[in-house]
Length: 78
Image (tube, rainbow, N blue to C red; front, side, top):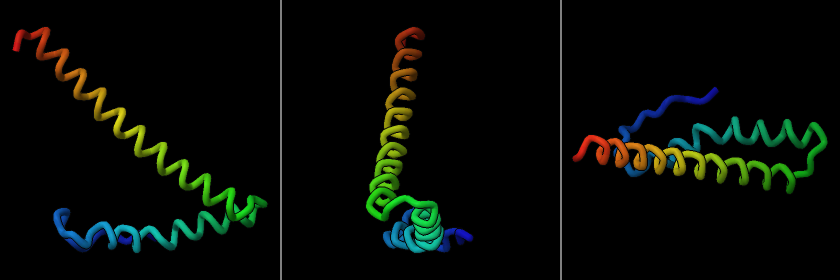
């Protein structure tokens, strides 16, 4: 179970709290993958790649949103 945050969004320790909240689930996922026959290094690399892909996806979505906003402003003459 992932516990909800206790700290406000602007708390400097919130990221550490998030990592602690996710750690058991993360380790469980890794152990299940290893139990299914994947090597530890394969699982580590796959999890890293998935995290990086998610970051890139979000960044691309943010960039696309900004491009759409700029295009709308141009069309509206602002």
